Length: 256
Image 1 (cartoon, one colour):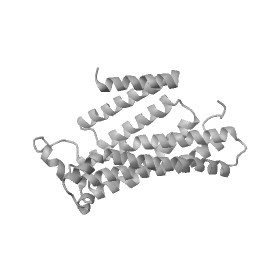
Image 2 (tube, one colour):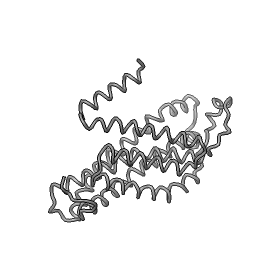
Image 3 (cartoon, helix red, strand yellow):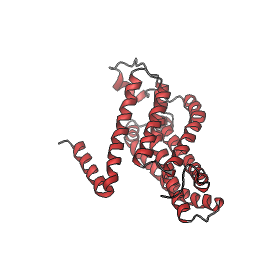
Image 4 (spheres, helix red, strand yellow):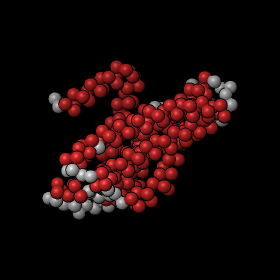
């Protein structure tokens, strides 16, 4: 038995032990999201347009995570609306930014390892870089939106006499608490994923100027910064959207 299979069985056992019946949805939903990622790779290999294919898979992962794993309710509907808003902002703002910084393709340090391989792939590296950044957003955006919408829902459900302003203020208090931990999580995620790259730069005796001008480093930093910006933007948006939906009792009744 390989280590990966052993660790997977431990994870499934812990999920079943803690979440009991709902763990079935979590395990099958995670497997479905993995299959969607494989489908994305297949679509790209078959020459499908990169951004439409990535956007479609992103929405499919969002639907599975929100509506299959967490059920269809006001909280998940509010989170889904926030994610749709985020996609509009991402398309309008991030797309031009990615083309301006031009960090797509292989870095100079990687060419020695790739010189024996065929680099004439049919997928443009600029589009592939966009796909990588968008998929890296998915976890932070979905987690942040459902966390805020769930917290706002519980605040309103237990204190229905709150005014809209009070509900938004209470929800924003939750946002501030989540934001501080989210920023630290993203910071250490960047440090952990880039640790090997940083050690490599140190072994190559790169100066500080060479590091900050390296495509490999800038590409990793850009992904981390954009992911952090996405997580920061989605939190207040989720707070406002959730407050509006719950206060006006949109979509359905608040009764469980």
